[in-house]
Amino acid sequence: MRGQISRKLRKVIDLWRSTTHEGERQAARARGEALAKAAGMTFEEAAKSASVAASGGNPFVGFDDWMEAKEPGWKAARAAERKDREDARTARRAALIARFGSLAAVLEPCERERAILAAVARWRAACEPSHARWTHDLDGLSDG
Image 1 (cartoon, rainbow, N blue to C red):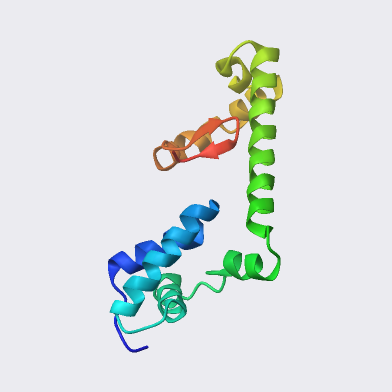
Image 2 (tube, helix red, strand yellow):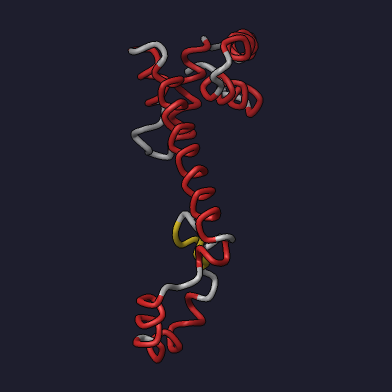
């Protein structure tokens, strides 16, 4: 590597990697090439440098880009899968709320859960301060 990668160039490269909009991707690439040239390197060298610096040793950094190059449309397919999963979760939440009338009713412990909570009450009381931040919602436990 001949030059140092700037914060601005790193942000442009991150945008180029993350966007799914082709026009935005092309614009980021063009701007990244200009910034890389000013730093005395090619865009590919700058992108590799940004990956190494940002990865922190994570072997999966850049995997999406690699797969997209290997199989065009891979990123769009993964995005569609994520959207389908989120739509299914949203539909399940809506169905549960419709069935029970409210979110509070959905989250209300059933008879079996109340029996378990009663059985572990003394141990739970001893541990409560360290677990007080945990909440329960339709997606499970959260420290939100």
